[in-house]
Length: 229
Image 1 (cartoon, rainbow, N blue to C red):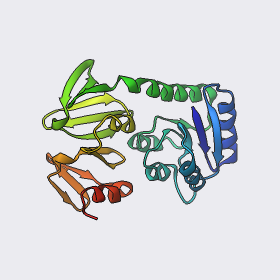
Image 2: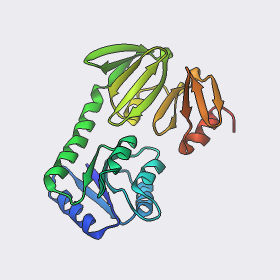
Image 3: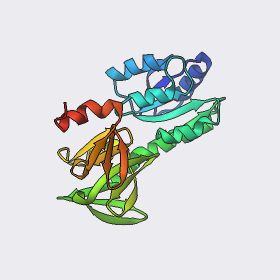
Image 4: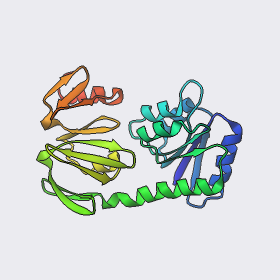
């Protein structure tokens, strides 16, 4: 996996680099001293994995993730345990507490590798039907009855009018299987069926009793799609 290290502390950067160099499955493509430098790097080159510090000047690690339309897998690095809950909200694969240890580092990398290997087991399409694996079952869902998809850490939740299914996937992987003329990414955590939109109120999409936020990074493209711009 091509990886990028982002940390404003030199000692921490060097430690992560040392661990990466010892791990044959990882290929280090860059080291950045802050999130702004990393944002410029990622605008030019795609990577598979970020080793990302939380607390950095001018832009935090979480702010960097939020600025990326399609963030890669992320392993957060932090000195404070309280950041763990927020990491869950940002769909982070794992988080490492400083001081770092190589066994814990390897465990986090293995988790990312497992996520990547499991994506092909999400489901498949057959005409206008989607088959998803959920709770050890393969369930058929009509795309006409799929309202929206919501990110949930290492999983996604697929919502129909009356049911929801938890599926092991990433948003990017799942979206690639959906018809582009019918489904739109409107937020880092939401994909919607545009046929199910009831109204748009103050940058929230209303459908089936749910208020879904429109993310700043997706707003212009979504509004153009609706011919509102």
